[in-house]
Image 1 (cartoon, rainbow, N blue to C red):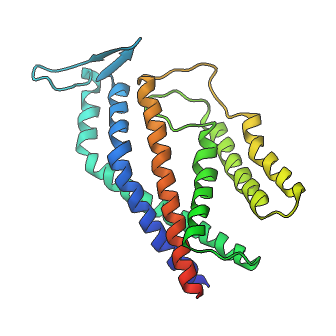
Image 2: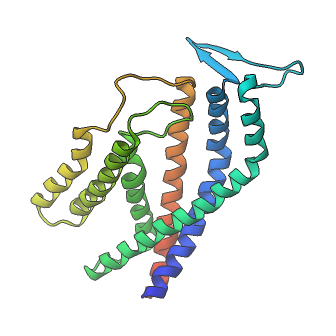
Length: 240
């Protein structure tokens, strides 16, 4: 059983991590880099007007006091991409272990997991880990002010736990009582509300922030569905 858990998680985590990295490099990283240009002052957005600081050759530059920091960031870009790659592999392998542990628990109650049902598990994981918390604490571009980080982390962890528990009650519970309890758990963190500053602020244009949020969630949804499908496929093969 332990070998089955590990092998399913490793294969699924590698597949999901690779998909996530490729989509992030294509869709998300360019937006992050552009957001950092606004953060450093190389670009300025104010009342719908874009101001770009350029040198004599037409290249975008940051103010003098930030030029060294920008140069260092460009030099470390490859190391940054490599870190993104390995972190995705590690994180999704960890998520894969949690997911196949859920498969094993479901199997004890007679629920069989296959490739297709694994994709549904992956979608549920995306809802619990990414989508539900993003309803209160959405992904943010660099330079976006935010409330106290400890309060935000507590709310995020509480939302993840209650969402996972709520989904389990709704899907596996038998009877109306379980469905009502599950729905209450799903709604509770959002009724309480995530910690936010009493105002909106940010150096990047809101259109860029909105695109960053939508692309980030899209990439994570695809990666989670791949994670669940691959994990379910290998789990089903090893139980035959």
